Amino acid sequence: MVSEGAGPSRELTNNDNWSLEKWTRVYADAVQCLHERYNQNKMENGGNGVLAWDKDDEPGMNFVAACANIRAHIFNIQMKSLFEIKSMVGNLWFGVMVLTIVKLTAF
Image (cartoon, rainbow, N blue to C red; front, side, top):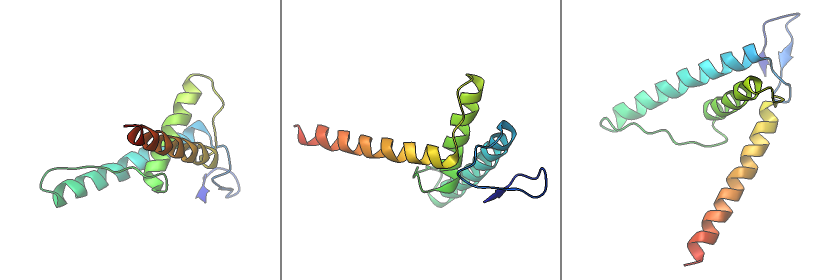
């Protein structure tokens, strides 16, 4: 759970729809964390930094969800909860895997 900081110590869950301000903070925190991870990976691999993405990786998922919701706000589209976005990403991931397998076995 994440504390919003406003009001009587209300806790936000992954099922709540967060404010634009909250998503902006989530985005900034995720970028900072991913940047630190990239730099660490770069140091460990002789100057070649790489970030691998996994839907179960919290900073990576927070980055994707925050970008999606900030973009949704810009275009006046309903923002989604972290849980809803993670569910959508899981479905997309499965679809991409199936499509890749079908393409590889077609030849």
